[in-house]
Image (cartoon, rainbow, N blue to C red; front, top):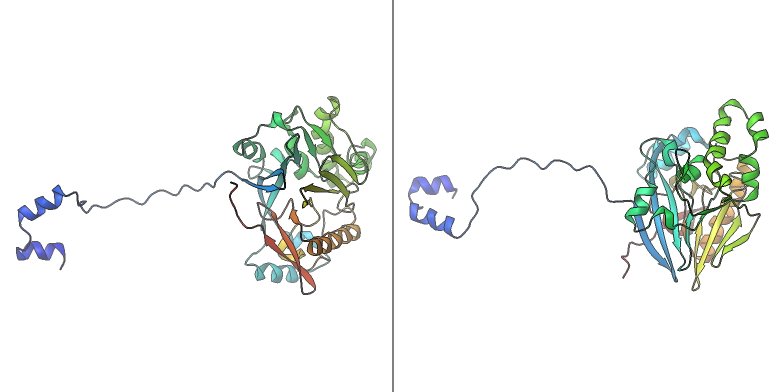
Length: 326
């Protein structure tokens, strides 16, 4: 029986109602709907690799029209592949970097896009601080390649964001992107990439903080650069090892998980040499599936850590299971 009916019937006396109030039964009242907050938690995720602490850092996201950017395929095939994973173009694409604390060195792999890709990126500094570190604490920064979305976070305007860090990049990439001759002969729509690379690296070059390497090179104990040329002339991956555990950081070996794991032959317009880029991707997929090591990538959905397995004619991605650190 509803409260109004009880009151009309006389079953509820004024003394009973008073008793309800005394015992703290809340009065019935209307509340306005809570406003939507529309923000997420800071973009960092932390895990351990042997004795090394690994922190995935989000620089933000950008919607990419992948049906127009992917090559060696068709827009129809791309659309079908995306639909299989409940996605559609433009695909919201993560921009990620990775921080490795070896116990003696703090190493950042890539730096995000900074201010160069609009307001949805440039979050790395804030997320680095939220994760418990400051830019001044970073000892070295290893760049997978010199596209702007991987080096843009090195600067704030014309100032170095990481004043104490040495920048390490494969010599093939520095020779290519920092060349005034290459800038001069580049097509009009490609000149901007050279100009940005030169401007972004300038404060580090002037401070003597750019130190190129060539080929497979151990940069600090437990972290090795591995040649993966193709996406750019000096594109590198980084192999991180501690206590028998391995993490491979891929950079731009792949961009669109929903398409390129199923079909590794699909390439992208950003590749300097698409055939070489495909060969490196196929090699990396096969090795990761066979060896079963952890993988991190710049454009997989954040936090972009997981495992690769063989599936049919292609491969499949299994994200790292969430687990808090002790």
